[in-house]
Length: 204
Image (cartoon, rainbow, N blue to C red; front, side, top):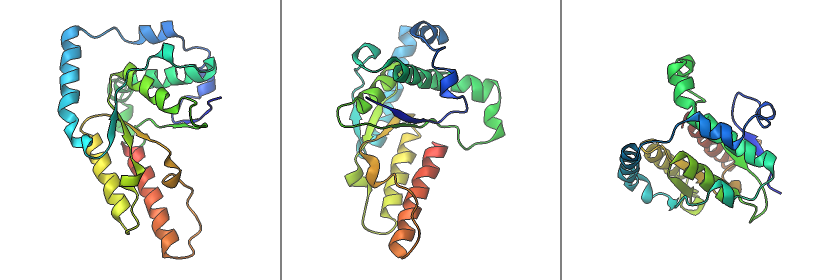
């Protein structure tokens, strides 16, 4: 069991699940030439030092065949990959980016017990998209001091924006929470942390 709770896109997932197959995914983009692949890998390696001190890089070696999921969930993951691959066409060529600069990123919320494949799913997406995958260590992000959590998040997102990496907030219950009713200063600052995180996710 591995439900995907949320897929942030303007296209309803249920209208896409039956249409996305491995054949369709292969037809979306032609394979890159070896020279382009080497150049892309070199650019990724040059951007890594900005994030290495802030997060742990996970080698993306898992493939679709390694991922044991129900076909519905697997198709939603493929839909996410297609969505990312077509962002340049939709936002630049079709001009949708000029309509607004916010909400252009893609977020997916994975839910399930330990061992159900949440991290592996992110790894498969990173391998498919040829992007680096970084796990965010919440123990190094969340701080008891006011304002420090936001500073740590800003450093992570600022560094990630130079690399185009996939950020995986693992076991993120401590940071991803509902805004609570403000009864004291602690509640107010907790809400500020959640609001800041959601704002940076939307703009990343």
